[in-house]
Length: 306
Image 1 (tube, rainbow, N blue to C red):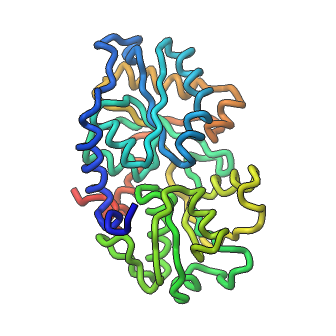
Image 2: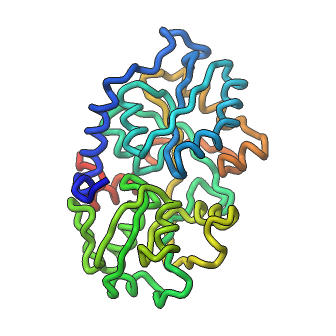
């Protein structure tokens, strides 16, 4: 994607995607439901890893939902965050796993009900960590060093909570002047750009095309475990807690679906499935849990002011 496209505000990108995806067929089962849940439940996934890997990784989760709910489950992995939002807004999917920022941005396009978020294995709460990383041999010890050096900074997806919003917030708090509208300007950093994902952001730093990057810390740890990033090659110089990824449904499905889907998540007790979902268990959440993300997103130009 060219830099000129990234200069659009994220909300404008989402609106454009809604127009493009809106031509598709809505997700429905001819009105047929099982305890309020559509007989064919279409589930959208945010692309925090390569889309084809994401779908294969989450197939056991789809199998669990089919068994628990008694419905057919289809997985949908968009090319980017905006694609998931657009699919929700057009009715092509019913349920989605979103980053907090993506959920907040989506509220302008479609009425959504947050259901649950995973309890993180490291923090023991629904919060997880956004981090800024540099190469281990880099001279930087804190974020102000990166800024004052006029370095190159890589983000993940423009609508990522831990790969875009919170790193930008940390940069601003450390003295950068990130532009609230022209999102690829963050002086005195020499250059900022969006890689499209946490794994790509980590690899950009590892490969030397960026001096620092913002990403989700637990994804970096997974990359290290999988051997994609040598352990210790990247060093954390800043981090911040973020409210967890919510599973949301289209509010139009109704209260019976809210109750049944929430119950399906909170009933998961298979250790292998919970490990796949990066959870110890699931905890119900509501819209108010994401107020900080709404505020930061509006201040930094990643959410349109209401």
